[in-house]
Amino acid sequence: MSGVHTKLLRFSGLTDAAYALEKHLDTWIESSAPDQLISLIDPNAISLLRDAFVRAGGCEGTVWLIDLKTDELVASYNSGEDAAGLIGFRQPVGQGIISMVYSQQQPYCENNIQASDGHDDTLDRKISKHTTAMIAVPFYFGFGLRGVISCVQLEEAARSKEGFSSGDVETMTRVANLIERLINESLFSSALGFSDGV
Image (cartoon, rainbow, N blue to C red; front, side):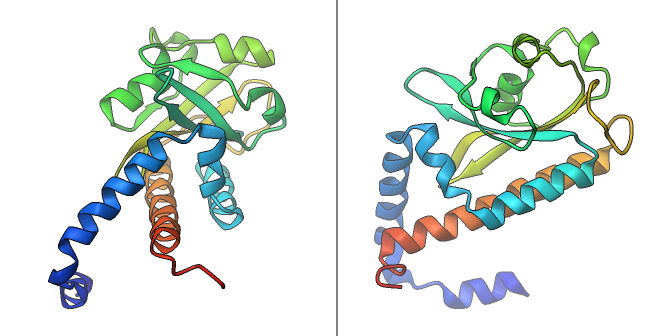
């Protein structure tokens, strides 16, 4: 039913404008640094993220945004107690599981992460903790892949359960999709001037 409603709202006279809007947003996003783009996730979306991390059974979660200038994923938001030390950490694309999720654009779940050949423990060593389980899902907004959202369990932190399930992966995928919609609505409103003077 919602698909039919969407078609009724479509205005064919805006086709060229829609293409121009997509190009404009893509250019703006690609020229913006991750520390600027993270502000697109407003406090309500952050609250959704934090709830999803807890619901999945994670100790904390991170939003990784791509820096196209350096080809690195940057830890741009973290919900854990070590957030101050984590924000700004850079993971080269092509190294580690987060990068694999970004490159393959497929969700990933591992409940024995330390035994995984693809696990890069550089971040673990930086915060002197040990990741035991991880979910990572691709993160899209503004018509493209923009990063990864990860949720972890740490050996040193309290958690509600051991490991993650396929349902937990679905939880993280759903919240990533919902935040994509929220960001897109904000981007469209801003680009079209709907939010001016409000």
